[in-house]
Image 1 (cartoon, rainbow, N blue to C red):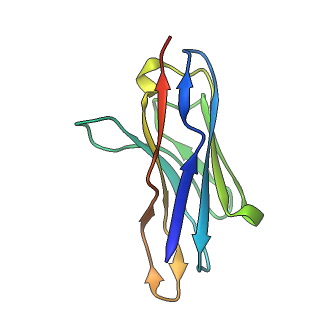
Image 2: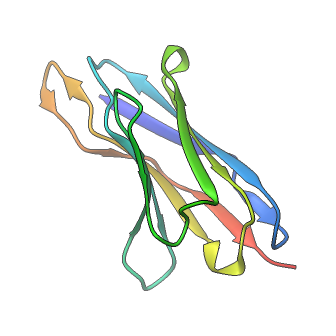
Length: 119
């Protein structure tokens, strides 16, 4: 079993910043790629960012230049630094990982953390 737990969401004013964290636990050989997605009610989940095992990154067009994904391998943690936040960034943000385990390759999601951008 592999578990992902997100944290760091909250209420922030437009133009503000937040940093989300995603901590992985369990038994695995590799966690990557890991990514961030977001979803608002009644809409499909939207790709935000991804990071690979060799630190390659990619971003969704609406966040490119404002968000930065990074990782701490020793802590099995992925981060999402969000700057210049806009009301349209309001969503529940989910962490995703594709770990390789003794049981095979998995596709794991966290429970999400809510980000609200409002004045």
